[in-house]
Image 1 (cartoon, one colour):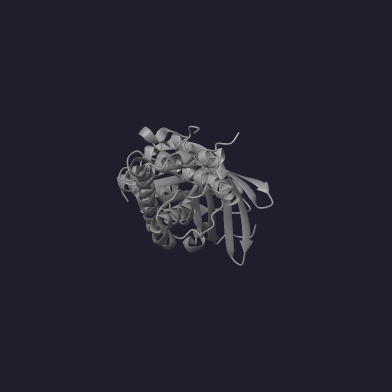
Image 2 (cartoon, rainbow over the protein chains, first blue to last red):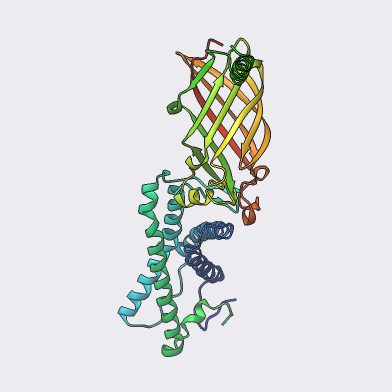
Length: 180
Length: 192
C-alpha cells in the first residue's frame, strides 16, 4: 500500500527521527541543568542518566545512518537553490553532530577518570587515556558542539514550520507520524 | 635515697618499661616513597579510585616470632586523592570523613598469625571517624635486596564507619563496599 499523494519517508526513518529528536532534547536539557549543580547524590544520578542517554542516542544514530544510506529519502519539494543547499547542509551537519557530541562526551568522561557504565551494568572502554589535562581540553568541546546542534535543530524546526505555514507545500507531512 | 624518692624512681622506671611495647632494636622502617595505600569503590556502577598520599607505619616484626608482632598504621585522611578537587573537598565534610574532627584513620594490630610461605593474617582494630571495627587483613610478604614488601587488600563497609551520611547513605549512589589495597615497603626485616 503506497501513499502516492505526498512521497513520505519510510516508517523506520520517521520513528527514528521523532524518537531521537525527543531523546536529544531530553539529553541536552538534562546536560544544561546538571552542569551547574553542586556535588550531590542527585547530581551523580543526573550525570549518569545523561551519559546513558547519550550512549543510547549514539547507538541508535548508527542504526539511523545505516538506514539513511540504504533508503533514499523522498525527493526535495520545489524550493530555491539556496534553500535546498541550506536544508541539505543543516541535515548533514546534524548527522555529523549526532555522532560528534556523544563521542566527545564519552571521551571527556573517560579522560576525567569516569568510565561510562551504561545503565550501571555495561562498562564501556576508555578510548582516550585518563588525563586531567586532556579532560580539561576536551570538556568545552562537548558543550560547544551540543550548543551548535541545538542551534541547527532550532533552525531545522523553524524551517519546517515555514514550509508548513508560509510555503504551505505539505513538506512536513513527509515526516509526520500520521499517515497521509 | 629516701623511701619516697626510691618509690618515685621505681614507678618511673616501671612506667618507662611498661610503655615500651616494642622489644628494643626490633623496629622496622617504612619506605613511604615505595609504599601505597589506595581504595576502590563504585558510584552507580562506575569504579572510583582513590589513594592516600600521607601515611605512616610503626612495625615491630620478627619473622621468627610473628605472633609477637605489633603493627600500627596511621593515615592522614586529608591526603586522600580521588580524581577531582571537587570530590576531595566533599570528602572533608562532616557527612564524609569529617576531617576537622577526625583527621586520621588508624589500624592497630591485635594478633598476627603466620600461614606459611610468607603469608600472614593480621587481625586488628581499624578506627575511622570515631568508630572502631575489627578487621582481619591478609598480608603477603616478599623480600628482595634488604627490602620487604607487604601487600594485601581487604574490604570495609563505609556505612560501618558512618562514611557518607545523610543523603549519601544511599548505597545505590555510592557503594557500601570499599576495597582497601596496600603495598608497604619496609627495611630492617630479618630474613623470612
